[in-house]
Amino acid sequence: MQKIEELMYKRASEMLESGEVDRVIAWKKGETCYDVSPATFTKDNLEGFVYDAFCGANLSKYLVEESKKGGKILVFLKPCDTYSFNQLLSEHRIKRENVYVIGIECQGKIDANKLQKKGIDGILSVEEKGDKLTVKTLYGDKEIAFEEALSVKCETCKSKEFAVSDETIVLNEMRDNREKRFEAVERLEKMTEEERYAFWQAELSKCIRCNACRNVCPACTCTHCVFDNDKSGIAGKANADSFEEKLFHIIRSYHVAGRCTDCGECSRVCPQNIPLHLINRKYIKDMNEFYGEYQAGAAVTALNPIVDFTKEDVEAATVVGGKK
Amino acid sequence: MQEITTTHKPLIVAFCCNWCSYAGADLAGSSRLSYPAEVKIIRVPCSCRVNPIFVLKAFQRGADGVILCGCHPGDCHYSTGNYHTRRRMALMFSMLNYFGIEKERTRIEWVSAAEGAKFSQVMNDFAKTINELGENRRLEDLRCKK
Image (cartoon, rainbow over all chains, first blue to last red; front, top):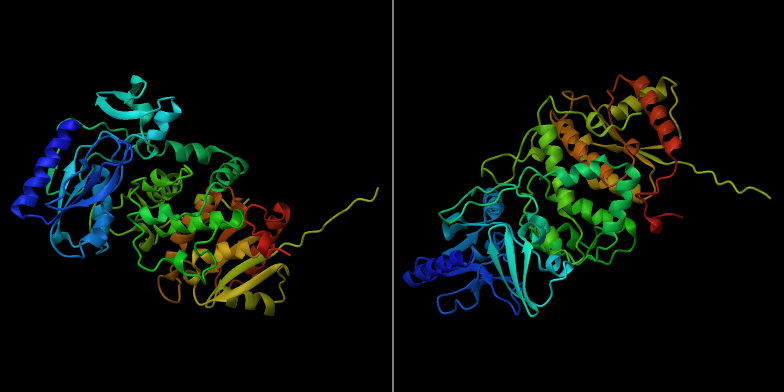
């Protein structure tokens, strides 16, 4: 992974020097190695440029604002981020001519919380070695299976192909675990209604309405959001009761249904570790089953199933049940 | 010891499209076919006027069941409205069930203006189901309940 970072850095500084691009959107080192955040770099300031296993953030949403400012932007996108980029293109949210996309290799991103849960504290740096992850800590080196440290959003993959790119930097074959994509949703579906209710009640009652899931979501790019409308009755307030939190998450996920590319950012940023991607993924699974396979962002011209219809569509009663 | 019994009177919200189902309800009335008093009809221009949030809001305000009635697919006054309803609500109801809301609480029925008898039968059947299920406890907003 360190090798790729070098190549990316080289390419970024090259393009900035030659004036091919004016800005670079990439990841920046934080205080600790796992405290990585998205950042814009310019010619004079490429300090802190990083790409490692902690760079989980999807950079495509930042282009909505950045591409409006004029000038050419270089952006690094992992395979699954390219779908979000494509989806934003199809919604005319990004000016394609202002963006140069470099697709980069991704072996799945890891979550520092998971390492800490396994008792690995004082993390200084990590190194990927095939299926193993070597973690340098204050208390000496520790080794862990890479799979155990994967962040929630990377436990399953939707694709390792670039939906869009101007060039790619890929050195090794990328790990692909897309078979398990709907496993967690199926597990929930198999539960009884009572169990499912209890599950979501427990999960969603943790919600603090910080709106992080909304703000980070590449599909949530409305400038006027329903949750900012104080007449809607669901405007950014603390969860007053259990209805409120369900309402928020049902609406949030429904608004992005058919446009959600399953990038998993909502779950990654959730400070309360609510598996929000399971809500979005349920819509994806349902749409696949009811209306045929559809991957948002796979093609710029594709029509979202929720605004489309056929005369032979299944009835709600058939798919949900409903009648005794 | 005296037993305390509380009788719950269910509330059912029925969204009926202006052109078919509302006329169907009318026909049921003029044909002297009864439907339960728990059913409160909200007339909408087309079944696709029903934003999924209306369903949630109905539950919030104390509904125990929500039923959507529209023209039969293909017969929409606006040509394609109910096709859109069908997709939206299939996904919405499936999601509500995913959250653990009993699937019997939500329903879509296609009732034409000539089907007064069907309207009455559907409402009676739905009200019976909701009566058996009892109060909506899983998607309630305590602030809205008296």
